[in-house]
Amino acid sequence: MKRKFTPRPTPRPSSSKILKQRGSVLPLVLIVMILAVVPILALYTYNGRELETAARYRDHEACLVLLDSSTALCRAQIEADGAYTGETLKQDRGRAEIQVNRLNAESWFFRCTAVYGTAKSSTSGTFALKDNELVMTAP
Image 1 (spheres, rainbow, N blue to C red):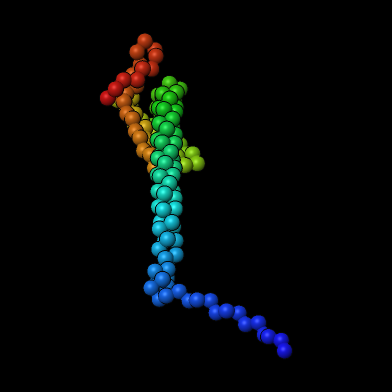
Image 2: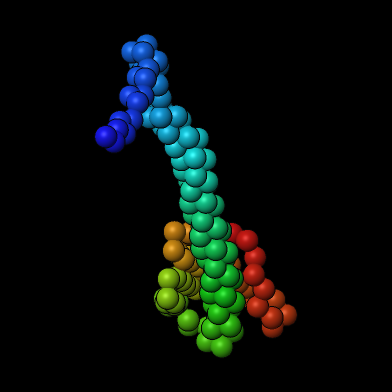
């Protein structure tokens, strides 16, 4: 007669060993995830702030260029026509306003205001004729 193979029962660990092993993976996974997520969030936040700073710098520089060009345009228009009173210039993200008031026959007061994106800048002064040349002076 043949004997049937019956596997030996594997010994079960004691209940104290089971309690020590149960739930040890979850805290380990949580610690590893915290160690991975915190630096990633910090880098993401740092990168976002750097992009905002770069955008503000770009807007500021473009605003200053727009302000300089509107001042130069104001001078050229006064040289061409002494009755020039100003205008508004528009670009994609920017706008410049030029206001000119004639003080007397040989001097004009001007105010140029430029806005580009989030940046805003303005300048003012006077243009005066000296030796048949238009010269800008401070207010």
